[in-house]
Length: 496
Image (cartoon, rainbow, N blue to C red; front, side, top):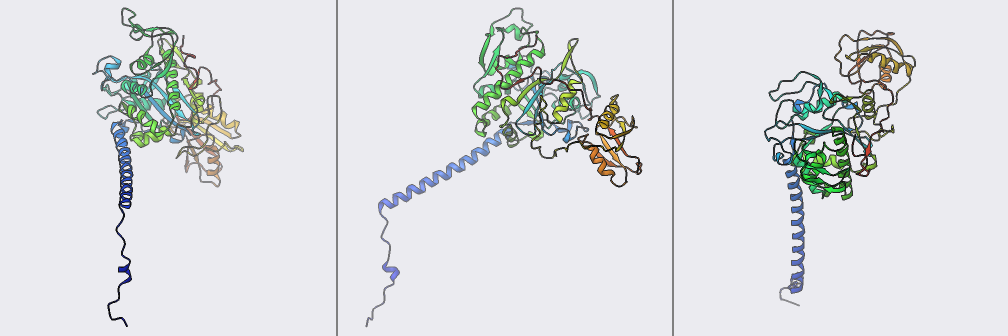
């Protein structure tokens, strides 16, 4: 019989001290994990720092300056972005563009980019700065609003208020009034930002139809000066890129129309360069940083994530499906007049998400813009048409459309009020009247349905046309005088 204390088995199995080799292996593992964790933290912090830096660069303009009676959000199924090139001399831009740094801001170029709802097609419509338009009421720095300015040069809208930074909201208001399209975003980029972009991508391929000298850039010179460009294809960046897009005199007829053609060719080459480099966030970040330092945007694009998200939404658009066109125009003295009905046909095609050759590019529609159903047959539904605008003949134009779709037009008159912006379809309390109004609405996208008491059963519907309605227009060839982003940089360089 054993009388001593029994030993604990756990104590008998005491672990041997770790070998020197094992200790080193665990220390290496902890070191590797520590480094990996540190890199992850740094990457996340760095990404956040980059986004904060980009967001800190972005300047937004005051949305209070946007018109109160804007086109309805459903006026276009795709997305419309107004791009303005500013020749403001502030923030170091005077060194690149010349002029007085205390001068007021002006728009040097502008185009409306329509991104179709399928996100595989896009078209950029250039608006010459000398185009005669109606500038609607715009907000001044003191909070007051201007009076409407008919028959005024388009680029005057950006100078309303006479401030050094310009008035992007007024230009956006003017484009919305001109086109009947809602502008979803506005982007302003100045000389310095433009030059930086071309540096970041390592140069852009351009082409000149002849040798270009300093005198072509500055017609006030008494001599032609040094040669800036040689005839033919070449790569440009920085100041030379800026000189290229600003050249107006000494090439073609020296007009702004000819310069627009070269600007379209330049943007085409820039897009091609970006696509070739790879449309990824890693590649876009340096571009974004360069652009945001000299960019002003609407509040909807006022952060880095919103800006990069929008840029990434364009990655599937093929260069061949990216078209450039100038608003249909003709000379009116020294100014540019808009040609109708061609311009209205262009805006109508963008509203319907039809490409310039008439193809449907509706695809998936952006949030908040439901796809419009196909027009239904009228089946003899009675409609009284009233013109709620100051545009003569609009009621007759709508009546023609209604008859073509088997609606019965009972009257065409002027509305009591002629300042309607949105089209209204009014219906009475009778059974089935709302359904008839909905059938009529398929012919008038964006129209509001309204129940009214004065339409008794049996009197039919009342259609009150707003300024957003432009009616069916004669067909126009929108494919002439266009270029795609895939075209050779030497093709179709100059007007005149």
